Length: 86
Image (cartoon, rainbow, N blue to C red; front, side, top):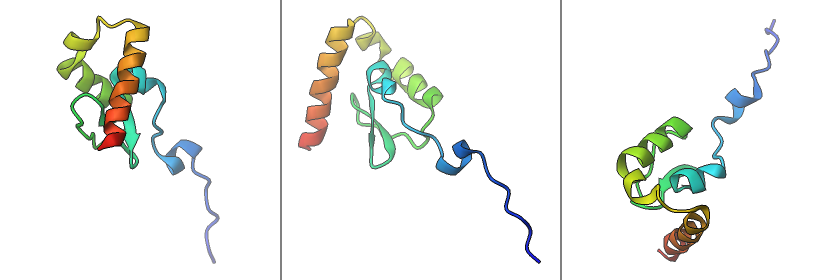
């Protein structure tokens, strides 16, 4: 006799999901399912906003926080192009 399977919440089945807003907020993109910093190319082992934010604030915020939205978008596009070129 087998036990009935209990449905898991959707979040537990799929795991964390990369959020598009993290690209502009923290300069991270998802490469092969791993969050990667576009500025220093560090690959984070855990896909959680807290970790990405902590990395950005401790390593890059002094240099990049003064950028306007348009400047951030332009820099983000340039960093993405450089990542794809490699």
